[in-house]
Length: 437
Image 1: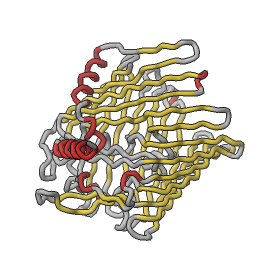
Image 2: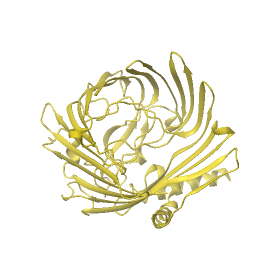
Image 3: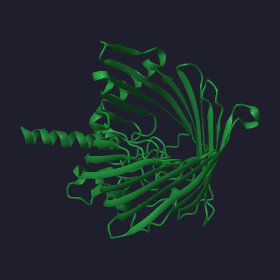
Image 4: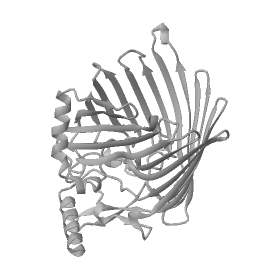
């Protein structure tokens, strides 16, 4: 019976792959149509639930969103759909149950998106599903969780615990839930965090028909791992963080499967060119430093990494500064000015990156109003060949439960040797309408 069940599981996985579903969604493909219906229902109704028995409380919150991406240019790569307007719908409910005076908490945050164009962007995931216990000077989290390490705006070098959800947004800010056992010890000399990460999650990439992909699609069916345990390798990480006066310092180390795969060319079963992801075992030491002095915010992220097929070792760093003009012209608005430098010393043995010698400049305008209106505009310029990218993000509340977001991305002057060359015609404007509940 076990053999029969295994064969059925393999057959089901192959069917999911033929359908173009992302790795995170292959076993949950049935949920995609229901996520659409649930999102539309939540957009139309007020679904808030909260109940408790005095010592415990259960809360339901979250959001549903309608999204439209518009691409001014036709796609440049073979197999991509020439659909200039790409609608999708997403839903992310959050369920939390607390008891024992709030010292124990269960959290469940599923996420689902249905996309009209790219089957790989239609996916279901558990962002968080964990139990957390809080004590006086320690806390413990067990399950799927999300951890953020970083202080800079343009790039998060040390943020390595969670895998990137690349089909959600090309900025790398969206992450998949990571299985973990996380123990935090809080002492006078700082906080010590220890992580056991039993299991690895592959990166999700756009499909052959989708936009914002490489010249050749990434074939996750052909994924390779350096470790013989493949995606069951147990990774380890630790971090020390401390605040000393105006300084906030974080020192971390990670040993395990790299969240960045190397992409090498190959052929699929039909003889078509593809990119094959390979995940190496790496060691990475990271450092974050942030100093606050009045309107000045000085930032630094740096990392040292070993691994990637050879004994190749490289350094990468993002130093930067942010200056805030408070109450600009007595308007009540705050204007932040950002400047960062992106350095990365990796060679061709490591996964490619576009941010190896770039200057980032940006501005953040906070209206400080009841609608939480904020605008962020940033641009990165390559110091060698002048390629640059511009990003715009703006958001504001329409009502107590409705929020609207505008996002735009564009690149220009990208040479053929740059990793962004494949998406040089994928500039887009995106509008999202959120319904919170």
